[in-house]
Length: 586
Image 1 (spheres, helix red, strand yellow):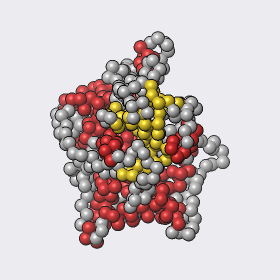
Image 2: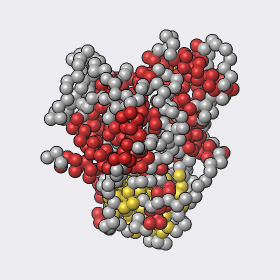
Image 3: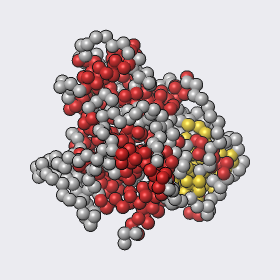
Image 4: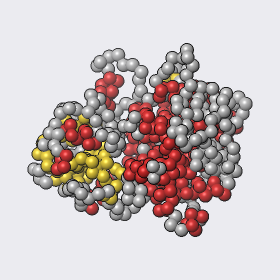
């Protein structure tokens, strides 16, 4: 064991240390063997073979992060997961004191805009994001300063990200503040919110989809456990509140919740599903009490088990990442992330078709423009209002930042790739000369030249003018979503099913001579542009089920523009805020 070295702002390699903003308690200062309080994060033994850093990180985190390093590792893990287009060094630098001023500068700007008067700052009330229960649970005695910090961070997410529904946010925020100052908690939660599909549902429909997906997986892996829960009402979206609204806090010891959160910040939403299924399986296997008839009784009994001497977190972790089943029934692997996301999307689509959500038809505010120079296709406010309506709620308060235009930068794919590099999410607009329509796509990942298909189900196709319409991606309900380890026969129904899934998942393709989104059995694309951005085509694509976007299959291309979505703080992008913060230190 070792004691952490005291931090010095002059040493940019030293990591930020955890602090309890919520309750004001002292954080355990001991750093376990193998960990370090400065770069590199892990101390390798001479005879130990050095692994790939990310694999080593996953393994070490599953063993538990030293409390004093939780702030540093949590925020860098979140930055790594949310910024796949960046180098790992970019994300890992957030562990260090060198980025502290950057984070504080963003938070100061947020606080100044939210609370113009001292009374606003003192009297801030936290939004509940659809989590109407008290979320203090077993996280300790919250101080008055802690309550105020919790309110400020949640208000910041509400006002600067635009979320109204996200039940997991309050308990996550409260737990973060046990180890983070408010600026870091806000910074981390903002990143998670802008990449919500990796971490939590942000609409009521998504929440129902996640809960039904969990029930779907439990029925496949442990049908008897699922049947018991269905009988007592604990497998409904409301019955699953201890997991999907409260992040295990009402049912697990607090130190176990922290260990799950350690893993969750790096590996994302699959952790909730894996540990939820494993916990239920372990509980029911050893349960010998009376018949459970209600949801409250189920979770109360599970809590008693998890707080007993027989419960071991290391066994829970092994179960979460192991196989399911027994010698009699086939051993099943937990669905891989790709299949898990398909199941979630499938259940979300099914919930949307069956549920009667109250429709509130209010006009959507247009996306803002960071600058107006050179903009052609996004200048019209009606077009930007439609784009805002189609985006996920966490992106509706962003501004359009023009990064590529054929009018300014030229008309080749090489120039296109060069200028969109680093744009994690972007909107491409295309003028069709044949009928003067405006069509486009939303790309959930960076456009890059690759031999692989990339992107995910957040991508969508649209037509802005005439007759604005958006085609979101949906899972074909006829497909099987089983996750088989191996399929031998090339003619087997399983292999043909996998081919159909692969075609349906042809989200983004970037080659030397074209870019496209969506595909079909005949080789057509939902949207495609050629190498010099002069010719395009649009056909019905699997998953999107779109009409030809410009009402033509082949067309001539006019102006092409690409916009990144900038999170504006006081009229500045995050990059500008960062640059200014460093200029002030010189």
